[in-house]
Length: 109
Image 1 (tube, one colour):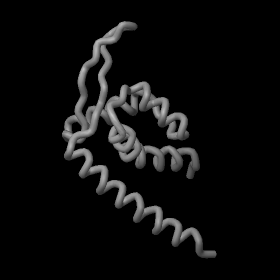
Image 2 (image 1 turned 90 degrees about the vertical axis):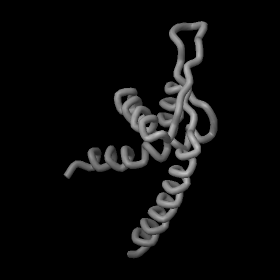
Image 3 (image 1 turned 180 degrees about the vertical axis):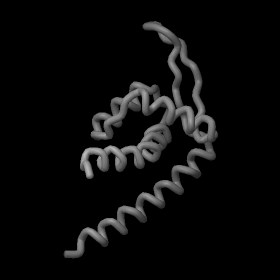
Image 4 (image 1 turned 120 degrees about the vertical axis):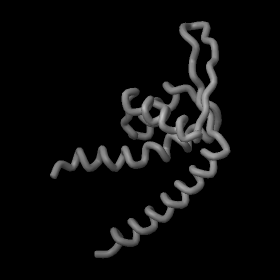
């Protein structure tokens, strides 16, 4: 078994939750998402993020709008929908439960 593969899978499992959480704080551009995820050591590349954003959009959890840019092509800014907010609350509850369960198990010798 390869520990690096397991670590990658753990991060991927949390990526949707983290992306929704970042977007819930306000409109965000994709490169800003990547920057924040990278700073938090949630290693992500555009090839992973764009399909995730498309899935979230298709599920009506996020929406986007185009903003003209003086420095190049228009930019797509993402925001969370009301349905996305409800979904995020459910994920947050699940996360809290998982953290508690994991800590309970790993605290035992």
